[in-house]
Image (cartoon, rainbow, N blue to C red; front, side, top):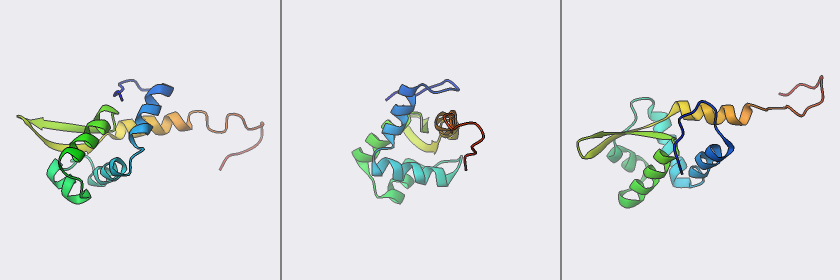
Length: 111
């Protein structure tokens, strides 16, 4: 899975990001980080909050980071913080909504 930098996502980039969310553990991690807001959480606090530890936590955070869904801040040799990447969330939402109701006949509203 590859992170993306553009404002508009390709189908491949969106699929990669959504694939990263295909794990209950990764989705739980992302929900905790979203709740934490912009400051994010330390990796230790995130592991404690979710019950995911060690190699599993590292593995899931790597996938979320590569997909562009979270950001990690390194200090020296340690990762001290992870935070949800809200710009990526917006691009994913925009990707899904870009053609919302485009095939509806004229005069029909969507709700």
